[in-house]
Image (cartoon, rainbow, N blue to C red; front, side):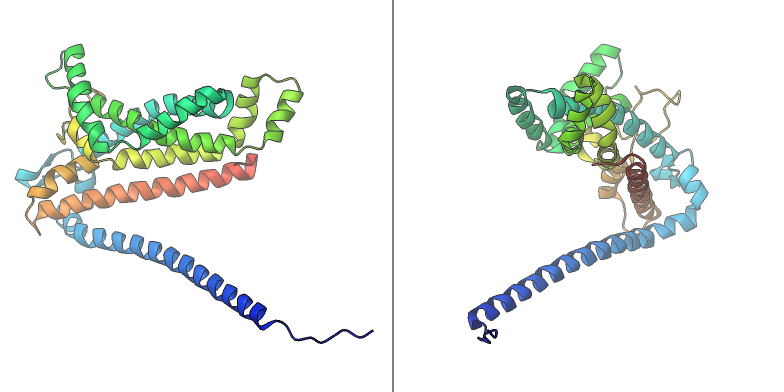
Length: 311
């Protein structure tokens, strides 16, 4: 028997045409969003380069980056005290972040029972939603006063205070991302390890952590950007004194970081002055550091995935 050549239902054709139109609109929207994000990033770099160019030309690239003194009243702009303070605060805060956040993520993803997780998980998410200015106020009222009394300090506003506050502040973000990475590891991997006689902790250490390493590294690098880019909380507790600690590793000294200098001085600076352009140079260096960190993290994640796999 021959195949009937009945015409297709016009309503079905119309439905397919509408679906194709909707898909094309969605694809175009996604493409537009991607192009817009790239364009915004390029414009940010262009604006910072344009505004900081005067400082780099008048002060000099080496003098601006490696100068040992930042004294805006005397038009002396050297970023070394700011860079040293930022590195010390970021490193110490990240250590607190990792030593608390990663074990907490392991406990929530691998070891916690349903009841414990139902209590801890919402509490951590609630902490992640606390505004940074609230952390800053608590740091001034509690942490700074505690450090003053405990270590007989002239002022508790210091590198140590900023490190502790920022380290605690970003624990929820690190914990959440690391937990998601650990939960993405296929259950078959863990069951195979347990079936071979490994204990629960051996499975976590030898299977779950290596498989989730790319996600954990991404979480750590993301938190580096969060810590080094935090403004209000750090401004309230770090002291905002752009000078080198004496001795250099004295974490009890006040200091300044990139964001605290910009936030603390930009409101009083004369538009178009050398000080104004130098603050934009500080912002440009900060953006450059964060960009390099993100690119490095992507390369490291790709290398780990090629060698070990990753989730």
